[in-house]
Length: 226
Image 1 (cartoon, helix red, strand yellow):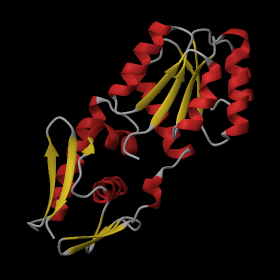
Image 2 (cartoon, rainbow, N blue to C red; image 1 turned 90 degrees about the vertical axis):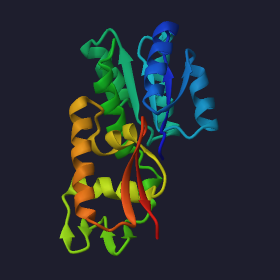
Image 3 (tube, rainbow, N blue to C red; image 1 turned 180 degrees about the vertical axis):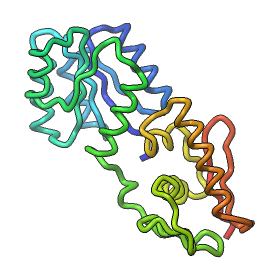
Image 4 (tube, rainbow, N blue to C red; image 1 turned 45 degrees about the horizontal axis):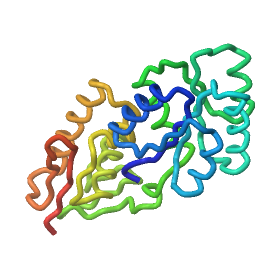
């Protein structure tokens, strides 16, 4: 799942548009609504990995919606958004089935990191069913045991190489790599990714059949000419 899908239900059209555009620009598919009654029909028509629900929806709609989601979609994570983060409201949201509570206006980097972790842990995607062993040129890579030929990789090196291998000869978005492996898209994670890409290039050595190529403005591609 290279582009996860989320639903945002919020009473403020301006903030809803702002939040939707921001998350969409980070390579999510985003569906938005101001009406809590539209969320369940939207879920029936789309593969959704997470819901963001505004606690300030009128007439307790947010908490009624969260309870319905817990019944009909028990594995779907729901994050509650609110500008009025009282202790009582947070407890009500958590008891209704929300997995977390985000104050509004949200710190966008923290929100994205929380979303990425929940999608990864609560709603694991089809990547978990993909192969973990690959032949890369003349070297065998075992992502389960973190082995590249006779070399043992670090867990993060192995996870990064496994992600690239699973989409061999295709571009993997930089944002997707950072969300999946670092659960963060800040400048430090981005710099760390560049370091790990260089490490993997070194580990792969002089085998001309295999390369990790930058895709300008997008991400990386592992190519295998065999």
